[in-house]
Length: 236
Ligand SMILES: [Zn+2]
Image (cartoon, rainbow, N blue to C red; front, side, top):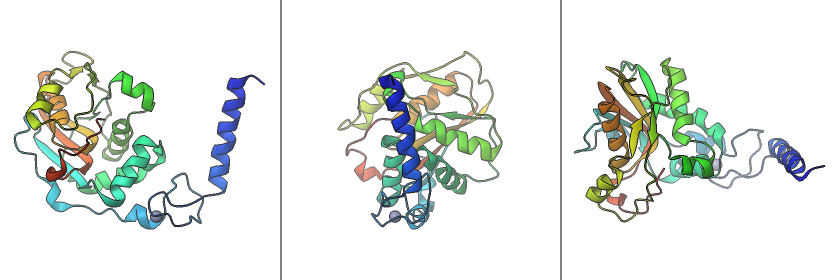
């Protein structure tokens, strides 16, 4: 059997075994008893709760007209996002879609859902855009078309230790529309996993506006406490 095939077969077999023999919850460590594609117990999945006070718009983030975040980036929610983003537990997109739907007011109307794009170099390593999976869930629930309208034109290193002003400078010219004029007059719902200072989302929102978007609302799963914002930020 060629090596590539053998590896592929092994991967499939392992995936299958994981499904049959669940191990421990990857958030709290309790033994799992149910067969699921998500290695997290029901209690941990239900634990993150809406942080109502967290729906205010970050001050001074030009380009964003409104911001909605489900919860604080801490505790089980933070662990769940790590599993999703860095350990590739993609089925978490579904419960995350429920979280996002809880925080987005039903009366809000959008013409298009746009995920915050990854630079192709990062996409190559991660293999998927976590914001893209979240955007797909919310687009389906809101019955609004999903469009990968933006691309990342600049590879930006992690922004850890940078001030807000430095972050903004770092993000200048980092986003561009895939097609000129394709967003004219549209109300855009921009989706990302974690909001830190808003430098990244703000830069993307301004690029969306330059491309003609009339209104940009940001929706994220979590929001990092501002006091912690200068802590390590792993850039999406
Ligand atoms: Zn658990």
